[in-house]
Image (cartoon, each protein chain N blue to C red):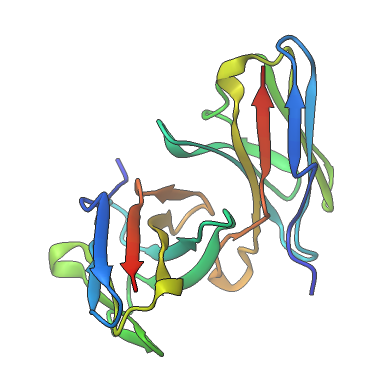
Length: 115
Length: 114
């Protein structure tokens, strides 16, 4: 079975540019999560969706960040305009809450560098 | 508020030693879930185990074992006869029974030296 798929795996961009990160969750999973990992702040939850609906976006840093989930098999995280402090590894994870199973399965991450 | 504390920032052991990673959690939920994840140097986060709050049975999987004690709000992870491949950052996480959201600890970096 395919795991969570993220693209691109690496992204280098200049400050002010728009960045779009993509995620395909595991088929059949109904929850999707976006995380950011940095040395300083550890693993932070940015936003999560349940059945394609955003449930909690309290972790989204500011208006420059936006996330969408147009269907059950695709989500995007967009940063516009990007800033050097956005440099981090961004993980997407998915889970199924059917039957009380909540473990999240993570994608390989996108390493974002903003210069 | 929910919180996960991994007090050990870094641990270094020599191969074949046993090592225990501590995890203490705080929650007011009566139903909750506890998890451990491994993040090897390659960077991916790998799910290791999930326990329910109503199941305090300890679990063993090969060289890995987990000790869940509600009385002390702890969910500790022991690696027996550690190997170099166990070198990684290990995260403990807490999930609410109401949502799928997880709260992660800060992680413990384990270095196993040959």
